[in-house]
Image (cartoon, rainbow, N blue to C red):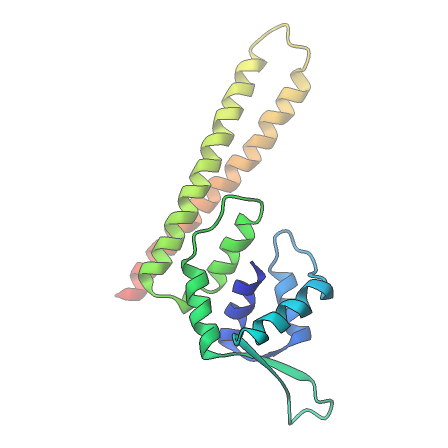
Length: 183
């Protein structure tokens, strides 16, 4: 998962490992820090696989190490952008990593990523709406002693539904913008 974001970030510019770690942490959903125990071994693995190079910056008196993507890393980035996203807890983060790297893939791949995201989001939306409808029906039962809990369940699902609807609108706006950029 982090491999995609690291390669995507490095496509745009070389970066120190420290800065790269900060950018990576700022892109996680929810925002959290990536531990050095995960991050630095991942950088070393990417370097060992030939996807990135880590070199001392000659112009820097502190000789800090700069990280840059290789041509093999660019190819790997393209491969990762085309991999379907699993319907698991990391799904939203992976899609956001892909969105960050959309300028690095062709228009057909951009549309494919948006379509896959739309389908996953629509699945979530359908589930939330179904459960909310069920809870609303439960609220109609006059003898139900869980009225307050059911009301809050309906409200919470309302938030999830609103978020999904906003995502759907965003997807449609992206498609429109891709089409306009083409013209």
